[in-house]
Amino acid sequence: MKKKFFFECVILLLGAFFIFVISTHDAFLYKQSILQVTHVKQGKTFKSSDEYGNHDKKTDQTVYGVLLNGKKKGAKFSFQNTYAASGGLSQNYRKGQQLFVTLNHDNGKFEVTPTNYKRDTYLFMMCWIMVCLLFIVMKFDGVRTILSVLINFILFLIIVQLDVSWNITNFFIIFAISAIIFTAITLAIIIGINRQFTVTFAAIIIGTAIAFLISTGVMWVTNDSGMHYEALDFATQQPKQLFLSATLIGLLGTVMDAATDIVSTLFELKRSQPEVSFQQLYRSGREVGKDIMGPLINVLLLIFFAETFTMAVLYFRTSNTIGYTFSWTMSLGLVQAVISGIGIALVIPAASFLAAWSLERSKS
Figure 1: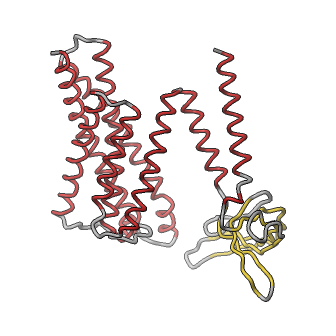
Figure 2 (figure 1 turned 90 degrees about the vertical axis):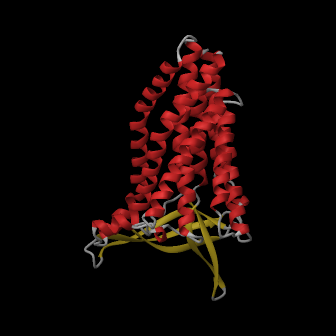
Figure 3 (figure 1 turned 180 degrees about the vertical axis):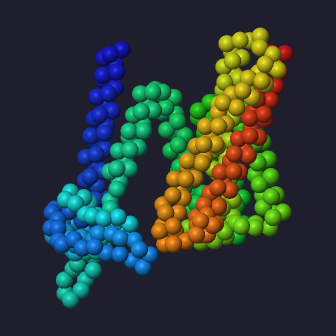
C-alpha cells in the first residue's frame, strides 16, 4: 500500500510539473500577442485622493519585456505603467509575468499596450490540484465526478453558443431544458442508471419545479416590485429571462445536493437494515434533511456575500446609501438565495417520501 501511494504521488507531482511547463510555454497557441516581462524599473510614488475622500498611493514604473509569439516574436518592448496600491483599476507588473498586449503602429514604430494577465497557468494548476485531491480521497469515484463536471461544462458552452447564434426572444426554455440534461448526466455518471437514479432525479425535478413555480408566482403577483433586473452585469438579452435562467440552474444545483444526500443515505440504510419500515425510512430522510438544511442555506448565503461583496464596497465607498446599495448590488442575489432555500425545504420531504416508497415497493 505504501509503494502504491508513493507511486501515485509521484505520478501526480509529475503531472503538475508537466502542466506547469506546458502552460508557461504555450504562447504559440494564442492569436493575441503575449509579452514576457524581463525586468521592471520602479519610479516615484505619490499620494492621490478623490472627491469621496478615498485615499490611495500610486507608483510609476517602466516595464521591459519580450514578445513570445506572433510576427514580432523575440522583439523587445517597454511601456510606462502607473499602478495604485489598492489595485482597483491598475496592476503592479513584476518580472517573470506574462501579459496579453496589443501592438500599435505609431510614427513608424511599434508600441505595446497591456490588456490583461495571462492566467492559464494558475487555472490549470488549480484544476490539477482539485483532480489530485479528488483522486486521493475518492479514487475513481472522484474521476467520475471530474468527468461529469467536464461534460456539463462543455454542454453549457454549447448551450450558450446556441443561445447567441439563434438570438431568440424566449431563450429561457433553452436553459431550462439544458439544466434538466445537466442533472440527468451528472446523476447517471455519479450514481449510474438504476432505481436510485430514478428516485433522485424525480425528487430533484419535483422540488425544483414547485420552488420555481412558487417564486415566479410571487414575482407575478407583486409585479416584480423591487426587482432591478437591469442591474445584471453585461446583460445583452432580456434581463429578466437571464435572471430566471441563472436562478433555475443555481436552484437545480442546490436541490440536487440535498436530494442526493437524502436518497443515498436511505438506500444505504435499507441495504444495511433490510427490515426497516417505510415510516422509519421517511423519518430518517427528514432527519437527514434537517441536518443538511442549515449548512446548505449558510453556504448559499456565503456564496451570495462573496458575489456581492466587492461591488457593495464600491457603492459604499462612493457615498451611496444602504438602501440604494442593497437594491442595486444585493437584491437579485438574495432573491436567488431565498429561492434556493425554498427548493431545499421542499425537496427534503419529496426525496424522503420517494426513496422510502421506492424501497418499500422493492420489498414486495
